[in-house]
Length: 125
Image (tube, rainbow, N blue to C red; front, side, top):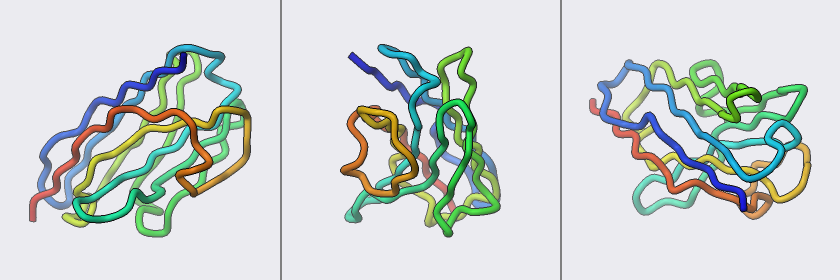
C-alpha cells in the first residue's frame, strides 16, 4: 500500500519561504510521477506542481511559476516543494499525490490515486 506523508507546513509572513516534504513508501518510488496540489477554504483542490520519475521533468501552475520549485530525492523516496516569495493567496492545505500507474503530466485531481493527509500553509499579510 502506497503511503504519502507530508511535512513542513506552517505560518509564514508574506514574502517568506517554506519547504514542504513528502515521504513515500510502499512501491518503487522513482518509477512514478509526483505532484503537489492545494486546497483553500471554500475552493476546489488545484494543481500546483508536477515532477516526472527518473528524468525529473517539472511543470508548474502559472500562479506559482518562478517562485515554487518541485524536486525529488529518489534515494530518500521524498519529493519537495520549495516555496519562495509567498503570498497570502497561497494559504491552503497542500497535498502530495502520485498516480496509480506510470504516467506523464496531468493537472487533474482524478488522474491521481494516492494522496497524503495534507499540510497547512498559512501566509499572513
